Image (cartoon, rainbow, N blue to C red; front, side, top):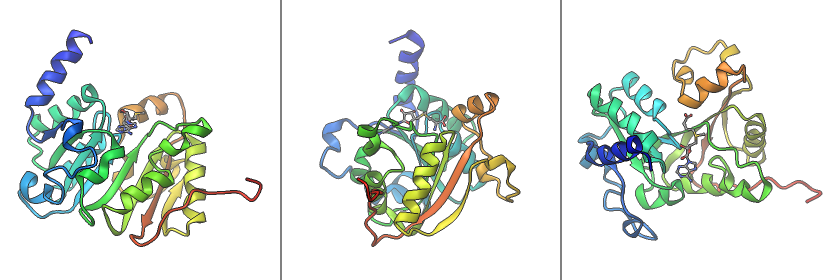
Length: 235
Ligand SMILES: C[S@@+](CC[C@H](N)C(=O)[O-])C[C@H]1O[C@@H](n2cnc3c(N)ncnc32)[C@H](O)[C@@H]1O
């Protein structure tokens, strides 16, 4: 590991509201803050929103600036990226921001039923190979995990450069009859009066400079509904 990365890792551990639990504290176990994040970490009862695969956490900090009476947590497995977001939160005194370094696969060890208000998935790895589809963050396997922690009918937002991932997600939403809030295959061509979709992440800025269109989809997840993978008749 390079010196810079190592220094960031060290500093990450000392920053407030950054959590990096070892596997033995969460594997098939409930983390001690499960169901208690608002009260014990943020000291309030405001709604809690997650950014999954947050990278440098631009959505986590960007939304936190706009909505001071809400709490925001960025989750990612990569600590060096997360350091940027955690430093921003510290430097700007954003008390409504926290970061959790873990695999999203373990999300149910961290959050209790109804604990989460909304979920943002920002530029996830598309996992294009068929055998890796299960690993897609907006795929059925993960959505069923989110369903366990989101309040009933809570929103899931996906922003992606990947048109196939966008179209597959749209198909999955329709196949499962999930309430679709809105969607676009070119978000910046829309005349939406909503500042949240125009927050830009590190990856998004790269895609935009390459002239790639940004896709966005927002849908609701009813708690009682098991999400099924799309199957076509020929399969
Ligand atoms: C393409 S990057 C996007 C980062 C950021 N959202 C952005 O738009 O700049 C995808 C991120 O998702 C994280 N990631 C992918 N799968 C994950 C998983 N199962 N658990 C935790 N993090 C994951 C990666 O570490 C990476 O930082």
